[in-house]
Length: 394
Image (cartoon, rainbow, N blue to C red; front, side, top):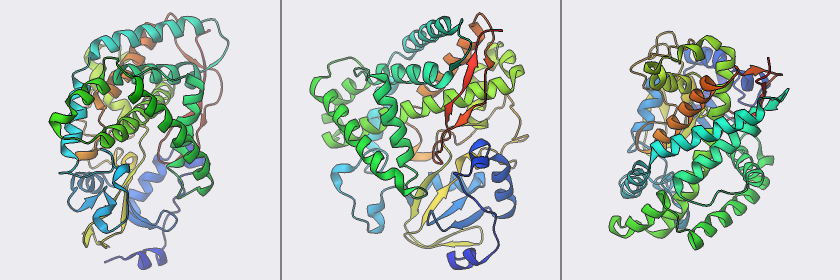
């Protein structure tokens, strides 16, 4: 059986999530980790890291053994900070159900049609440009409008909100880069003030309106709703923003895949496959509530376990031809939106956004082309681009 001390002493492949080569493409490294050291101790992250699909899935769905709520292992976390992201069942169940039911009750078809018009308008404005940044001109405005409409809140000003979201995404990597903490905390204060303003003035139709209307019946306290609204808005924007960039780059690198997606029968499975192939979520952590083993590795109570979902999504034991885009892959139980009681609340919404972007590219008057080298954002938890220079000019 391996322990952290033994793992630290054993030879291991160096895993630095912020290494430039890893940021460019982590998948060859993930394959070596899966094959040679599928469970390993990462000293800087102070956690066990998992790379195999079955290990990651089992941890994510076993909330009894692997907790998100760190109060269950004795840590002091204030109650007023709790949200759907930090609570575990059964405390989480009513809150999660309230938000999921409200999200599913929204006019997703209407939101999709309006997103398609927005995308078409952006493409029309960009059609004559020799070069434009896909992330700034397409990914950011589409993600923000979709998220605000779905939740039923006033759309924030684009530039300032993108800065807030970027700082919050970088803040998640504080274990690797402590210098991001201060900027991230300042961004959190600005975002909290924005969320507070929605609760003071919001009377728009949408998810938040429905959640607040049904909260008393579901016996969900106000601070859970406020915190979960914050989590949902920022996670939805960040996920769609990052996915829009990853998907666009994948389709630029695999133009034959975009042509195949003209077959409407492939759209739904193709969207799922694009997310599996290069999704935004790289990993998420849990804490062991009691002593257990993963393979031959002993996990002690209170130790953190990091599931590398992006590595799991390329595991050949689960996905035949894992490094290929298989647009009709079915079933496709990827972990791109998580798994279990903490899976992404807005999975359907994320799929809708990617589908509309794909349709927009198919309907564009001219094919999208690369106009320069893409630049990856230096974040480990969320895989995203900073810039993606493109053009519709031929």
